Image (cartoon, rainbow, N blue to C red; front, side, top):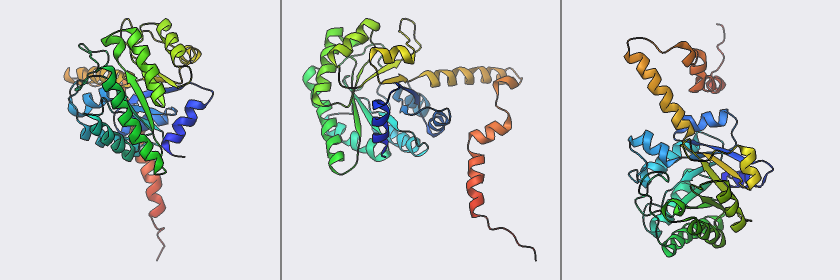
Length: 296
């Protein structure tokens, strides 16, 4: 099965799919080892870790797709790719969809923010007019359809940030329009509460939906069971792993900077570290190509 087919099967399955945000080959492989069924290449996390800058439209298409190529190659899981606004006009969107597909993604997310975009819960979020949002998504869907016509597969997620930028009514209108246009999955960023989530599913009853959660005051946090009961099929924890990683690194650096050592309880033992970066797997593969020595 293709990555897209595996993701499609997960969405159609009985369980809601919990999706962690990852940003490089190692974090993608760790998500797989932890037992997740899919992962998400977070633009927020890639921007932070690759260029050391916030998710404010500073990272380029080339940097994102190169990261995605390495990330997808490191895991057997289907990976959703964050393609922001498509990095330009509709022709840029088409190129982004084709490039993300070639990199190995199962699905690509396109949003309706102005270009350059910014993180959905940052200051100053703004969206393009309805007509431009629909043209942008149509370009993505046309590129998807051409990929499918060639015998390959890809899913496209239509995302709106209009709840924060304009109103609930506009967000619901766009979600319905994205579904009618043919988006495989609809993503309504920043619903204020469960009532707004339920309103989404009344407007979009047939197209699969994704809920993103973030550890921020004032944002609702639902369990997988609660999100599934509302109707969501994907539950994205986009920055949770990055949050934990920054927290752990700061604590470790503070310990080292103080002239001491990192407390052992905060560290893997060396054998686990060795295995965690792949040495055990490497040696097992290497052994297949080592000819046994014979005694003279």
